[in-house]
Picture 1 (cartoon, rainbow, N blue to C red):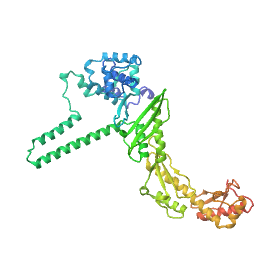
Picture 2 (picture 1 turned 180 degrees about the horizontal axis):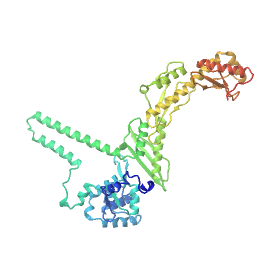
Picture 3 (picture 1 turned 90 degrees about the vertical axis):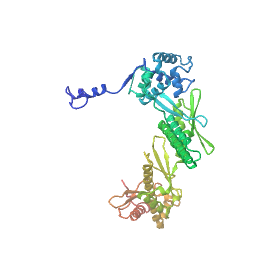
Picture 4 (picture 1 turned 120 degrees about the vertical axis):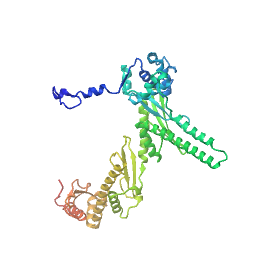
Length: 485
């Protein structure tokens, strides 16, 4: 602002040149007051429909409430009923038509005063879109403040007297009907004796019907996907992981049981005639109950995971992992030696990759990647972590092989331990691997908590042997200890 820049300001921005105020004064916005506009009437109708047991917050019930064509229980919602009756009396009767209120409802949604939430149904009862007040709409209704929205050409046309209104445009359904009727008329004009022309006209009619049906299905699917909430999308993602196929919203049934002020939500989906149901915890709020049910599906999806095919894994990092695994197994690695799964986390759009080696003896259950935004980045992170684990595993195996080749080393270690020595009794750590040299430290936790350093060497095997010799000289044979740190 100019106050922070002195009395004159910068002299160049829109504020200093007073161009911002000029643009705002010319902005194509229109103010809808609560005295004559049905905007506040619809907001009140949405609020009542979401709280009344006599109706649902869907479009038809909301419009009927606004027009006064649906009764509500005045004993529970007496103040709200009196408020909506008062608002309805202020609105001109010409603006209480179903067409105008439907357009105004969409207009309020487009300007952020309302929100939509998809409620799935069953095979007999399809799902519906329920309306909710947004934070902006709630504040406007409580403060009885005017609504500032861009003017709608369709609303302005319906506000005119019927004689002055512009011609109506055909709806999508009427356009489809007209196109099909034109095809039928063309078929009727064909001579019945001309079988070739009759067959061609019937084929054109079939093509028209097929195209219009596909266009209608794509439009319906697009509208349904655009209005899904983030929680619903996460739920579908988890269900697709559990069932190992794509799941759409019309296949899912979400129900919420209420008892003594608590809620428990369950999500059901039918797979090959078998019904699978996931139940959440008992919560004191309906929204928390649904999130708990989605979390239950997410836990099952985390357990199942999406297995990545061996053929999909490529690149130098993957080739390095296979070489290390072959060294650990002392043979060439195959697809049965590695299992890779992708899990969708409960957080939004996050993934984690799990890699396990089922044929590797005494291996970790799985190597997990960090949380990643995409599946490829999760796989890349898991492959890097698995390579680190295999490097340490191979290094440990080499150390134990070198130790067992020296019978005196193994016998002396077993004598000091009082039992036969095992590979897990000896630990090895790479202390320094820079400048093309290796320095290893070996520790025997059962005998000492100190690390015995070997001499640097440019060969990894020779450096490990040097660390073993240092343990033999300083610990197993006695004498002063040379320790790290």
